[in-house]
Image 1 (cartoon, helix red, strand yellow):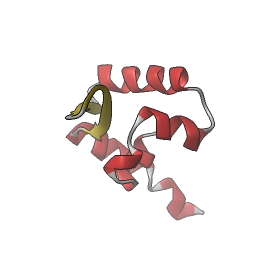
Image 2 (cartoon, rainbow, N blue to C red; image 1 turned 180 degrees about the horizontal axis):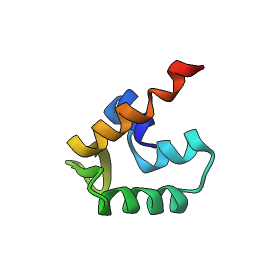
Image 3 (cartoon, rainbow, N blue to C red; image 1 turned 120 degrees about the horizontal axis):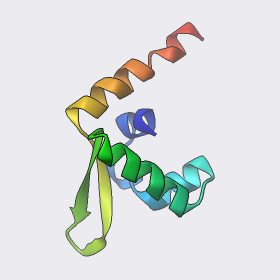
Length: 76
């Protein structure tokens, strides 16, 4: 999820989009987002027009980890 967030624009960094992309339920993605938030790897930016919706942003710590994790493709 962190690597996905690193490489995709804001409109794709929402729970609904992630659930479809990863073929998982919204509840499963929400649990993942909650865990990442508790670890301070992401933050949630509320949508101005809908307080129930938010965009997921990487924190500096999350971005560093995502960049490191994305290096695995170099071997392939």
